[in-house]
Image 1: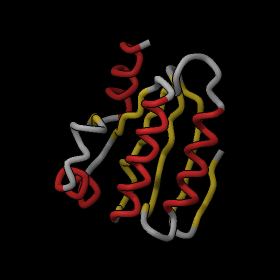
Image 2: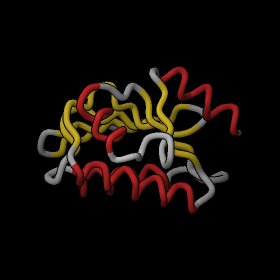
Image 3: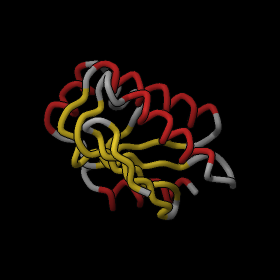
Length: 125
């Protein structure tokens, strides 16, 4: 399912071991609420065990503090539900911001490719 939200395209697909969510465009104060609603819906769609989700950010061009807050809130919800949220394809300014804020490595783990992120989640199942 692909949705467009004011400069952010969100594609959600079930792909074992969980959900893959591709964010393309900007995750910022104008799009973070919509993104969070879509991510919550994707989490609820998983019935067995805790939610397993990969955010593919390889096409994410911009992220501001509202976007970081959105990612942290989703990580907390998924973690509280006994699941795992990881990032794939993080690069450029979004990667720089997540490093500077200390989110990477503490709350969220990132993998260079979607395939590596899927392998990491599969090991947790």
